[in-house]
Length: 109
Image (cartoon, rainbow, N blue to C red; front, top):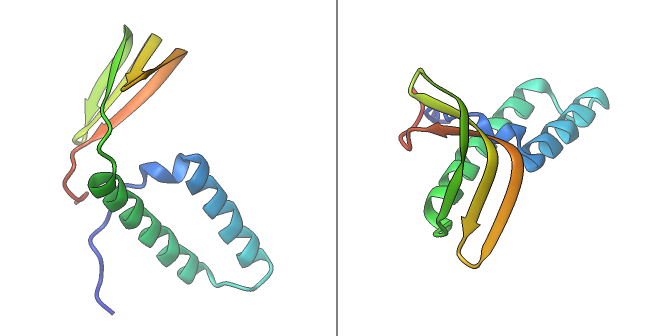
């Protein structure tokens, strides 16, 4: 079996990633899955979600608001925006506070 390059694990904190993690934890606790297989599933999830977002999503959004905090560490930008206003094609979404994490599109090293 070939080893896949490591991927960012950001999407594990999404609702889909949390649901997958919770399900894998339940399967491990019920002795239906070993932890090594669960880690392989999570690794495949990281690669698949990243690839799907890169190749399938064509939408663009603009974000306006008041920049509260920003930082750049290990090729990862983190922004906290207050009074955020997202404009998505024909829709606008407003939020009190938003945290944006932006990573380089290349594979994590």
